[in-house]
Image 1 (cartoon, rainbow over the protein chains, first blue to last red):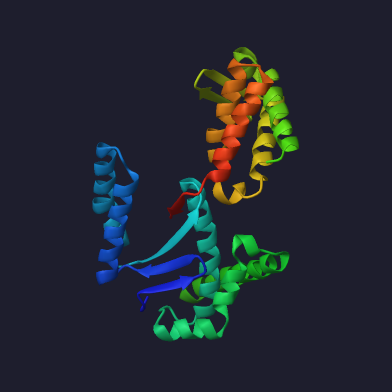
Image 2: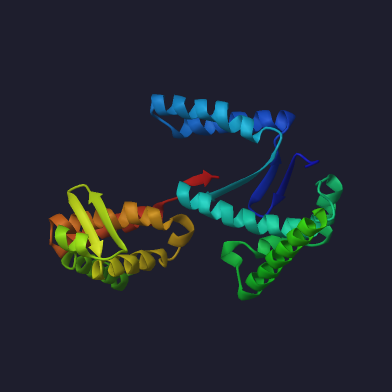
Length: 151
Length: 116
């Protein structure tokens, strides 16, 4: 990803490189400190965050989603929302494998942000569902074609 | 949650407790079934009680604004099992109604934001 972050509906894709990663890592630590009141648990979670999760995220693009929900439901909704957004994004940028400032503008021009907004759980309609099924189907087809071409 | 739905929830809770199999019947019952340890005992859900339990979960998920905020697991753990526990130790419907009121208000007020 060639940009620091890209907000698509309620999902924010963040580029985990350089200063962006440092900010994200410290936000993660603050979150743990804020939410975990038991000292031992807090230390264990911080250790896990530093030793296991940070190396996993460094240099990658991560998706961020915040909502008013209990943690397990927030995770479920994040996965659903992220899958939708990624499907749409893949469909529109399958010719390019890198998101740049230019891509961001192209996404805007193509109405992708409006489209993503349409897929939000609270705005969902039969029409948007059908359209999303089409995108998912196209995605599967593209993946199949790419696989065939690589063999 | 309106009064009619609260009444329906209480009816379901009472039905679950009344149709709950004992331990040996539970062991003999075919799956699906659930054995859940709660504060004051163990709940055995199989057959009719299992079906009613599923219906109750679905009923709560349909409550306005709850599907967005709560997973099925959360509703089971934080709403249904505590209420079943109370129904298990006390057959007073008025008390169950008060317990349900308290849990429903807590769920309606839930406004914690989480990031995934």
